[in-house]
Length: 366
Image (cartoon, rainbow, N blue to C red; front, side, top):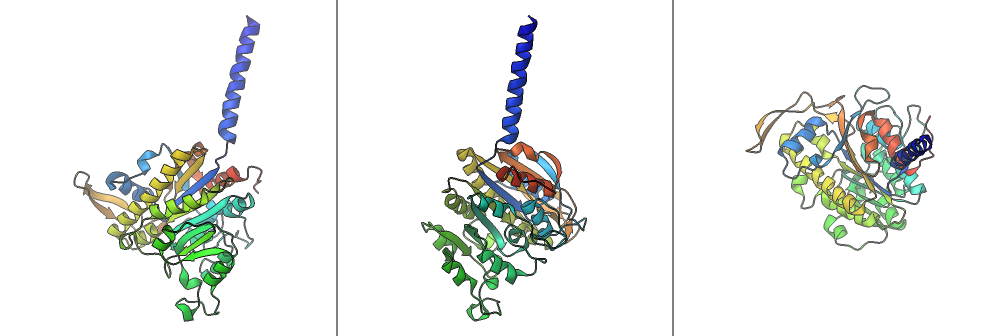
C-alpha cells in the first residue's frame, strides 16, 4: 500500500513538473508586439465602453506596467521603447543605448540573428522614437537623419510608416542637406520601395519592403482609405513566409499625438484604428496557434479620463489633466504561447526581457 501511495505521489509530481516545465519553457514561433503610444487605461476604457470594434475585451491575460525611465519618473517614448526593445532602462531621449551611451542589442537584432523575419508598422515616421529604438542606436531621438541612415543597414524585412523627409535630399522634396538619397540606397540593397499604400498592398512581393508613405507621419486614420489593420495584415502575410518565424512591432503612434492635443475626436479615431490592428493580429494568431501577442503602451499621455457620456447613445466626453506625458501605469494584454508571463504589475524593462528570452532563452542579464 505504501509503495502504491509512493508511486502515485511520484507520478503526480512528475506530471506536475512536466506541465510546469512545458508551460514555462515553450516559446512562440512568432511574436507580435503592439504599442499604443500614449495609451493609458483611460484610453483603453474609451475603447471598451464606446468602440463598436473593441478588441481589448477579448483578452483574459491582463497586467499593468510601470513606465518610469532610468532618469525620470515620467518617461518619453525613446526611453519607454528602449526598455521594451532591449530589456534595459535608459535615460529619456536615448534610442537603443544605455545611460552611459553604450549600444544595447535590440529584440529585432536578436531575431535577425536567429534567422527570423522582422517588421515594423507605424503611423509615425519610421525614424520616430518608438520604431527607431528597435533598430537604431543614437544618444538623442532628434537625430532622425542619422536614424534613417542606420535603418538602411538594419536588415528589417518589412516596414510601413512615414519619414521620407529624413531619407531624401532637399532637391527631391526631402529635408536632407547632405544630398544623400537613402530611398535609392534601400533599392540598391534589395528593398522594394513604395510611396503609395495601394500599390504596395496589391503587389506580390518576395523581397524586402520599405513603404514610406509620408514626409513625417502618415495621414491620420480619418484621412486615409486604409487602416492600421490593413497594414498589419500585409506585414504578417509577408513575414509569415519564414519557417523560422517572425518578430513584428506595430505602433498606433498617433494615439499619443491626439492626447498631446487633448483632441477627443482624433483620439477616438486613432483608438479605432489601433483596434483594427489588434483584430488582424488576433485573427492570425488564432489560426496559427504558435504566436504570442502582447499589447501595451510606452507611457500614458494627457492624464485622460471619461468624465461623462451615454453608452446607449454612444456619447462620450473626455477630460484631460495635461498635454504632456504622465507616470500613470499602463495596461498590458497578452494572448497565445507565453501569454501568462505578462500577468501582474511589472516594470517595462522586465517586459522587454521576457520578450527577448522567448527568442533567445540563453541571454543573460546584468
